Length: 440
Image 1 (cartoon, rainbow, N blue to C red):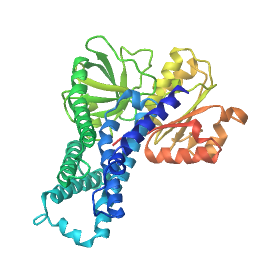
Image 2: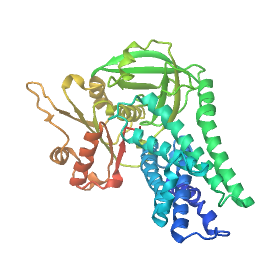
Image 3: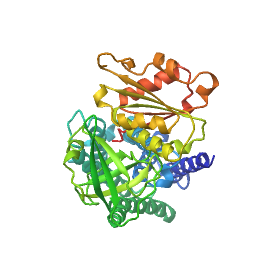
Image 4: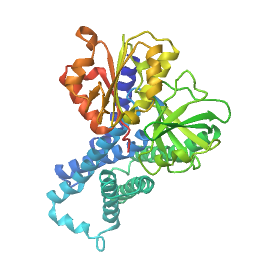
């Protein structure tokens, strides 16, 4: 209940700040000779700009803000609401051109006044940001390049837009209007300082180092970490952190990884990484003693957030890592509740933590169902993918099925299929918790 009210509070804060520019339009004198359509376009543009500025707050990873929702939900909301904000901003010039087609001449940057040039520059920066974000992979834009350009384009879009507003000189002349614009502008600058300076400084004060590198099945590696100053950060089982490796805390490159170790051993947290790309493929070359910087913990994907008589975990591939953190923690607590792990993999040899999962069945009331895409000869377990038929076969029966909490983590296509399958067998959405690694 506390998380619910915290969530309602932060949603209310977001709405207040998003809609605050409407006060500029609704209160005070309306500029003479302006039609309703033009005033509506101004309202859309101002609200869209306010939403755009708030994106800095959404991506700043304030733990009090992310805690009620989970940061993966926050970042998904960031993507969707950013597109909505861009739509509102685009409506600003479109409605002006509909009201007076002669205003199309303002699109010519050679002859247009500076207020129009800055507005056009802000709009182009914003559209470039959207194109690079939505089609980054199709355009083969490197992640680090995208991240730097994303921040730069966002700052440029807001700066140009504010310059456009100041030169237009409507809704900025009265002292209280100037105070409101100053507050929003200073707020954006403070958020940038917090993200790019204060957080890295704080990370630099509490570095970690790699204590051990363990090779796992499935081309995966576990990095066991130790805090250099002996002061570890507590985390909940299933949470994750952003990792900076082979760079300074001020570096751009960082990657989110789930903790795979027990939350009862925060002094030696571990992350398990599967070689899937340029960065992750270098894990085997990490040397003990390598300096690591952590930003975290984050995430709402944890069984400790839910009171239930039992849990069901459905994972695929390296998606098992946050679940292993939960299982290891439950084992350390000698938890007697019934647990079910449905674990999909391409082959038997690629089952990460295979031997330890078998051992955990001796320490926990744990049932394990392996599903293989390519089963070896003589395999008597499940084959293929997670389907409603497999779920019907292995999920608890009767009322117990609807008293469990369900945790799903793995590749995006697998998660989509599992969520559909759970819905098909009647599991309410409120009982299903997901963790998606696609945070960019």
